[in-house]
Length: 193
Image (cartoon, rainbow, N blue to C red):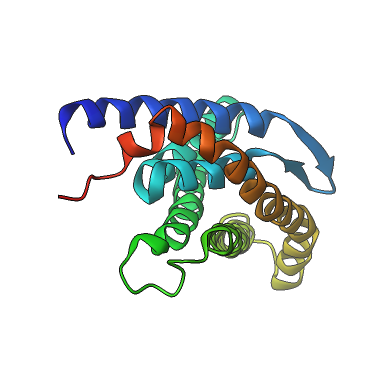
């Protein structure tokens, strides 16, 4: 990647991290969790910036949200990792169309939807794993209580990721022509020789 492209990638990553942070602020409480727009912003980062820069934007935005809202450094680092992997998965699956001979090569919108669904499933798994470990091994909650907490948190995370899997492809499809017109996507994608 040439120097100018690296600078663009860093700037867009910082911008998307800020968007992830701000959209995570917009939430509705649901049981022991909350329904927010942060996951949709995270997946959008993976689609626009690609798996690596999108993952960084998602992870950084979520990390700073947790850090500034009293979750602590360890919790923020776990959130960084899970949001990074969610956006990275969305970006990798959606970007599979660029690979020669890929089944998704001619399925533009389908690949974006599949990327968002895959990213959401990865995040749900990681969030439930984090909840299990935190309840069972950190807080020392008995197994029955741990399952109860996990079941209480599952609806909100499923709604967050279901919402993101529906809204993010629509947003990406709407934004893509404008991003192409101003050259954002070309600045972030390696040029073929």
